[in-house]
Amino acid sequence: MNALIVASNKQISSALASAVRRSGAENIALAFDAVAAKRMASERSFGLTVVYSDSFSGSGVELARIFAARGSGGVIIIVDGKDADDIARRLEDDGIIVLGKPLSHTELFRAVKMVRATNCRIARLLEEKRDLLKKIDDMRLVTRAKLILMQNMGFTEEQAHRHIEKRAMDLRRTRAEVAMDILKTYEV
Image (cartoon, rainbow, N blue to C red):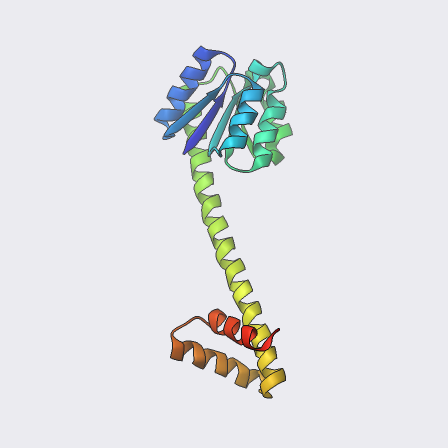
């Protein structure tokens, strides 16, 4: 997992990077201001972004929202402990994990592991979505091909369906590929 640490203090950046690395992140980029962080995020995607908020004079929350809106990975923001509950309520709908200072390595480790688990789940869901969209596209092609066969060959829907399936089996191709051939033949 690629990670971006955003903190203006180099010591804090280094400590956060070390903790995130122990949590399983391989490639860690450091940004010392919001402008550099936004530039880095536009150049590549990160599975995790950690924003150390007091580095940006109150704009850490907005910066965290920007990263969350990009949707490429999980976002953790570290804020003053007395403000953590209020900020967590404000950022809950954005899917941002809020940690209060002082922060233990264990808390950060758990939060990074949660982000990693969430990223894995989202990746699986996106793959399922791609598969479902492909199936829908294939079904649309087959339906259009059946309509073409019904119009041009006088087939019933059942005959058109059987024709496409038999042809796909005979040619060892998918029904969608056979449907494309039919569409190419009859559509101008």
